[in-house]
Image (cartoon, rainbow, N blue to C red):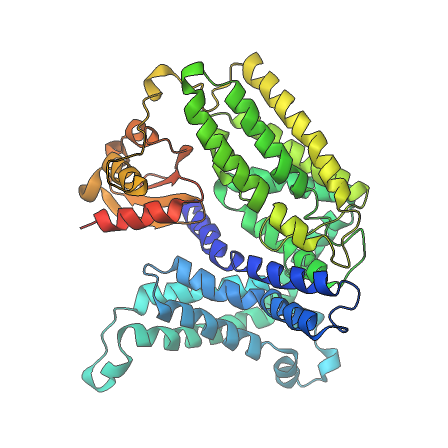
Length: 480
């Protein structure tokens, strides 16, 4: 079950990765015309509308992305089926159709059906489409129907499945929606404290990938909060909208890079060079783009207690930012790029104070991490036991360093005899193996990767960093 949920989390990263495009377009548009919403500038209006075309269709992106990511093969028919599933459901459960089925006026329809085009339904559509692909993509029909065999059958079966799903949702969606709204309202009613609790649990769920489910409640329009969409569209209350985003900037731009510096300074002398290269690259990624997994996975499993401290500090950061009503927003993650793009948006409120807060949190992270690491002899990168310290340079004469790393990791996994499948997300290789006992974790760690996460009996993740795609591509070449 956990592996399935992690695969769902990975699948969501594909559509979420599209959001920076919206951030860039809308950020530039508002920079050109920050007060007129594009009304006084055709160029600004063009850019803002182009960006909103992405933000406003996040549920469709989720349906397509989840279907593609959850399918056994990344095939276009799976993505098409995700779109079909979403269109069938949202059409059958639109307020007009529901009014006709219930024999009432449109105004009398339950408000839940006004929000049927949401991320939750998008995810459900993608999941069902992927199930249909995995079940029917290789089915052969009789000769008379042979044209509809295999992958052509998948969208058809998906459509029929979503008719049944829509019939079920017709009765249960009002209750599900009410539950989601109640959950979101319970947190949002806590104000700054609620934002702090959200930040804390957001980080705690990173290892499982379930943070995407939590994010969908607060960032997207699942329970009516839609913090990202409303912030970028300017629909909300200044100083309030964006409260579930703002507190991440001090952590990702300053806190985690400072934690990386503390881990470098506390590393063993002969390991400092290796740790420096790792933390410099990971720290820059966190500061500039908001991608924090390279740093977090570097100590998440080595020092879980330290990771809980990190989660608590994240919650504190969101609480402070929300208390003072300092807001900024992001389309992808809380890095410098999104901070600059959101700086002039209508709902950005004293965003420069987040930089001040970030400097303070940077100091807190550095000294607290350094104290805890040395006081309790925590095994952060560069402080592991001697038998885990062998490292390969990753260089080759005339070869590609990613090809070398891929070859070493693949050999450590057991090669063709043991590797079943290779996939990747933003920063991790996601691998399925026949026998976990045949995996040589020491050999894999010797390539200099930030960490390894054994998910289940047959599933393992290797945290590589933002260059993971190049390593995955090379690994695919190695497979026979």
